[in-house]
Length: 463
Image 1 (cartoon, rainbow, N blue to C red):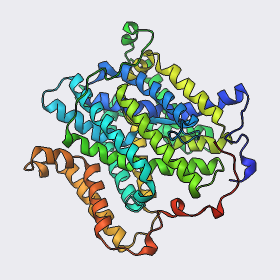
Image 2 (cartoon, one colour):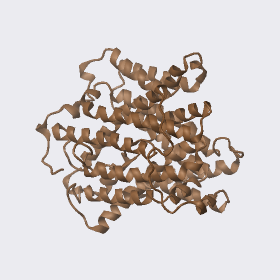
Image 3 (cartoon, rainbow, N blue to C red):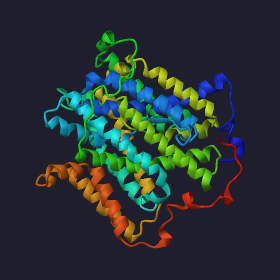
């Protein structure tokens, strides 16, 4: 991107209307991504009664986290317009935690207490790893990262397709009405994603879900009666559902924090590029460390206030690229909008009323695109014999335990709970093989941007 594409640089202060307009575009690009993981987890585990509070906290923590990441407080926060949001990467592992506690006879509060407990301690993994990002890049290569993201996407496709057909334990599962509605949403998203207008492409999922909900409303498939019994405001209650911990359930969560730290480094690197900041040298490394530390801190805060782990959203880099507005002031506006949305619980109740086929039609695309994103990362390195072997073994092990769950039945429960997640199995297999299998030094290109010197930096103004 050349210099003239940036209308407002990081330290510039555009006017109120320009800032608000740009902020709304960021919110539209990320809103569905922020709330969807909560909707999926609640739907799959029967936690619908808690959705208004969980959604409110997801939006509120997104706003506070975005402010921390954008403003920067000492070593915490990148200082970039890096929008925070609920991470999709944790969904499958959290569903595993929830189903395990449910199988033990746990209540909804027990399920949430365990999920937020393991997420709380897992956040410290990312906080610690933020200080060793250069060393991590030697182990977490595009191959291992790509394998994990592919496993995440594929493991979630079943959830999306189940919702498209009507949802878990639905009386009308697979009905023509459900399939028609879900496929309509899917086709609308495909149409707008292929549109030549960039703003329509950016808003494709939002448009698809809005249109699908409207169709469902006129077809009598929505229920908004819960709106009448909600309080006007929702305020955070630390550890509202309690706090619990289990080592076997913690390890898959910790591993995902491990990989999301690397994913955040990539998103912040792209953000730096679009903001025309250097992506080499000490300033760059400091920014990446602070950004990953910010992600970890925000995920810690998310667990305390009872919402799911946060990460830096990559889709908002596209908004910066398209608008040419990289001003930190816009990040403050985005944070304020999300905080305002978060204090009103009726927003969560409205989202809860979205029919499952609408949600499934949208998330099926989103989860499949997660897997495609993993393929892109994986193929950014040559598929040598070594890399192909790592990929094949990792995906074979990860998807194998997902398809044949009984393969773990004879293992001790604590060990089976670790490897029941295809993401954990695929990720650990990839890491072990990356360390064990010999590779050429020439193939190790993953650390280039983290290890290059300052000689190629361009002058810039940054906080």
